[in-house]
Image (cartoon, rainbow, N blue to C red; front, side):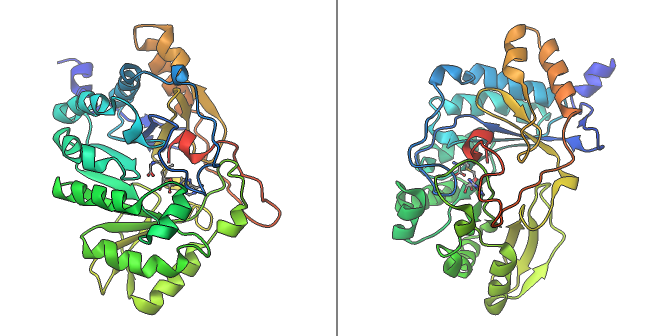
Length: 342
Ligand code: SAM
């Protein structure tokens, strides 16, 4: 048996210049979204022309090249991944890597609006856990945050996902003066339905036509307030991501804190991100990137693509350097979260 045959089960991982194995790929399949969250996008966004996007076949080829290089987890994101036309075809084709044992997890991050339509199909393609973004349960606040969204549609989506057998984690961005008084209720609500919840600090990504400082709520403050209602016990639970978790004694559930602004999580980073045009970002918070679309289209063989991936991973930076303070009212990066894939 040749070495390659052995690698078909467990290829050697991609390792960056700091010795970190890259096993997690996040892929933005579209920059478009059916919501316009105030911290994420400007109201009048200009989206990419459709012809600039990688086709679903190209996205499959790209993801499969990373699987061949040792990536064990793929998350499709966006924009809103479930508004990309034909997206179930991609879940279907990528599910072959789950069946082959070369991929441990295929998942997505979604705003939930399309889950009533797709939850069962996702489960059928081997998706088992999903992240749903939801910042408030209040219909008026929800509309104000998303500009266009209907919270009832998202709640129906969450119910459909749970009914389909998917485990759901809720992600909520903590927003000063918007949902800060509701965070404890969100915890009780999510945990009451068997869902974990993670709180996220606003990151300075992209011009949103608004002031970041006005939105930014340090999670240290949110946590101190939660302590007044709940007993938070630090636990070791890790998902390989940036969240630090606590066990909430009163609810029995898990609560995560994702604190890019107050806590640096880069030393254990195992992930890279691809945009819907095939640009590889080695760090969410840095501009350095590699054009994998050119490598992908350069040849029908995957040789140039694999070489481009290897070369780019070697350049993965040590970490990011976000700052929001009174002197840094501009975005740290020009690109929006919806471009890099949140
Ligand atoms: N549409 C999908 C969704 O809503 O989950 C996937 C993409 S969305 C960009 C992914 C996550 O990024 C969402 O939880 C969203 O709230 C979060 N997000 C977007 N912009 C952000 C920012 N500037 N800071 C922190 N989180 C942000």
